[in-house]
Length: 439
Image 1 (tube, rainbow, N blue to C red):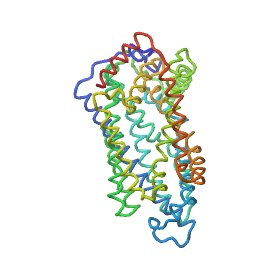
Image 2 (tube, rainbow, N blue to C red):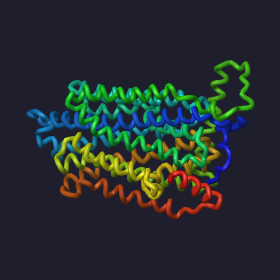
Image 3 (cartoon, rainbow, N blue to C red):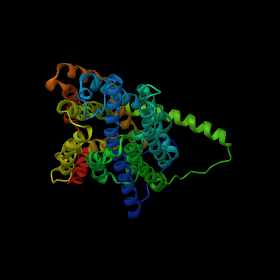
Image 4 (tube, rainbow, N blue to C red):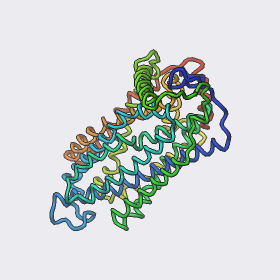
């Protein structure tokens, strides 16, 4: 890593110094961030379980007029319905990533300039609105095409959405956590995803007897709790940084805004150049490794539940409960004495590594760059999932899991980059210090 001092301010000329953070503020930020990530994962996983079962029933009734209960009709688990469901959901996932790809770094830059909390609140609200629009498309299915799902992600152009929210969350934690503790804290708050994913299966199973639409409406309340936590989050730029020359002049607001936009545009180009085309090739390689592992992880994870539903003719809730035990095992591995050998510890460590190396791009920008690459990986994976799942359905048997086999192969280049990369002595010492924090 090349960053061993203070992270340079995003705006040139803004002299910044770090001030110590009180213990109370530290725990407030960490706990609120944990709450938001937990609510986000609990909401997303349980909502998708109910939504996919709803979509399966709607598609099945569209194809077969005499369907009574979609859960009891074997045709709803057949190749035609499942292939169409895979196409619908995987393409929606790809479209969902277009706004973060195009606007993710911009949101990070805006957060660096105007503050984290406004963007955090806006992006969390976007996740709530997204779920409400999904429910509306299902509810009005008799009047509009089910493919209107592909238009719902457009809301993220204006709000940022869940991926930007997670990015800003990690940026906020980075603002207040010392480098030596960063990997350990990232690992701790990342456990919220595993706990949320584990509990979501049981929550979805508990709410489904109420009906699909009441269940989805109830689950949106969880994300609203996350939105409330975002409103309570302190502004960490004001906490961690003290600009020396923050004197506002009497320039009219319109001119100030115009100057800010021009400055933001110039800084965006500079940040992208530093991250991807600068002299820091190790940073570029690290970011590329996240792309390979992201595509592979998406291919494996996104199709796992549908694979179980189709292969073993399970309900979506039952498949979710069975797969949730894997998250419980990963959670246990995280806090065992040998946790740094766990695969799950890789992401927090790489995230901390990239943040430290991206000193010339600004914290919000570099974290947002990682989330943009995550978005790119999911967008790439969407069409691959749709095509390979359809092919696997035709081949039958173990080939239904074809997307998972391909995903495993795609992750190999990312693993090789991390394995073969070498750091200088100073970087090695920092990595050792952060690894000790995981034990």
